[in-house]
Image (cartoon, rainbow, N blue to C red; front, side, top):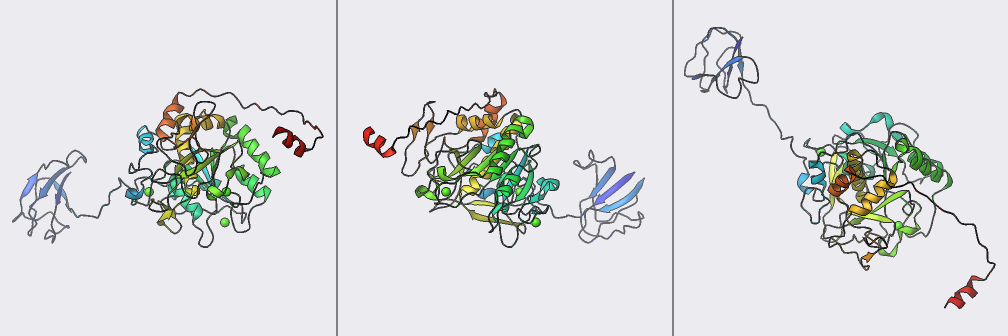
Amino acid sequence: MITCFYSAEDPYVSLNTTEETLENGNLVEGTSGYRNTVNVKFAKVESRSKAKLKIIDGVELVEEQIYEKRVLKSLDAYWVDMWAVNGDVVPSMKVLEAWNLGYSGRGIYIAVVDSGIDIYHEDLRVNMRSSYHYDFVSDDGDPSPVGSVTHGTNCAGLVGAEKDNNQCIAGIAYNANLVGIRLISILGTTDVMDGTALSHEQSTIDIYTNSWGSEDGHGFNSIRTYTYAAIEQGIRTGRNGKGNIYVFAAGNGGLDDNCNGDAFTRSRYIITISSINSDGVSATYAEVCTPALAVAYGGGGGTNKYLYSTSPMDLCTGRHGGTSFSAPQAAAIIALTLEANPQLTWRDVQHLIVRTSKKHDLLGRKYNWQINGANLSVHPVLGFGLMDAEAMVKTAQTWRNVPIQCTYTSLTQNPHRDLKDVALRLF
Ligand SMILES: [Ca+2]
Ligand SMILES: [Ca+2]
Ligand SMILES: [Ca+2]
């Protein structure tokens, strides 16, 4: 078959017949660029003025070439605002470098345990895995937010928003499988709710990212009985015995608060993440938090930049700041790391964060960096420093599993002595 393609703003040629003559048109045969894509012979009429086509031997189809609108699929609409990832901030979390090594979270399941996630958002729905979602507030399978709640959808975007689709942002683990778990509401949560959510689909979900916790400034509290058992079960049996990964935001109580008081953040089973601002100083809301393993960019405060992310109703919004938005980025970096080495245990992941996070020239308000017993720099607000996605995936590739956790519990000693007396003697 021979096909004639032609361009004409005001086509004179009847598409119903090939009994036309070419006048004022320049029939060009074999124009490069088309021939090899489709197995047809073509001709292009360069003149647009009242082109007429003359029947050519074997011509069976005449088709006008009309321009349809096309958009670039190479970037996301808010890519320029993704300073924490796109190379616009120093020091870098080296996410681009990890992507360039081929890691995007593919095959990894991340549950966003939060206030409700807009699973139908146009930048999220591709990665959503609907059969695993759950709403523990309303006890149904749809974790969509109720009312004007945006928090969970903001977190989900930073984890796994689709990349290069011309929408909003790209999540750091933009090919990961996302599971929406609605847990947080004004009612608070019970022990069974927390525990059930954190053990939901425990054999499928690799990482649970949590940007919630105890109220700031309310002293000490503990993980409750059922939840503690659920997390221990996840550590022992999740991921085929390699352990589920639990990530929690450190909290936003500032230096007057201390995340050591919070049930979840101080648990050895939990990876606690705090925030650094775009100026390289710990965020104003970052707490004293010795359990924090590392920081990720948090956004906000003074002249510091905020983060952009997905928001319900297909929106893309800025002005996101808080440790809530650092934890999902950390969870996503961990997803890249598990993709690089699926054999990593929950303890390996903690070791990798400690070994690869970097001090750079980061400053923590009020406190200084220290050298710990393993000769590593550590900070009471910033943990072991800024997460480094490239170092995480590279180190993971050849990482040898660390030994299993061993604990030792001594017998309780009861000296029957007045503590006050002991204190006096010691002084
Ligand atoms: Ca629901
Ligand atoms: Ca996108
Ligand atoms: Ca707190």
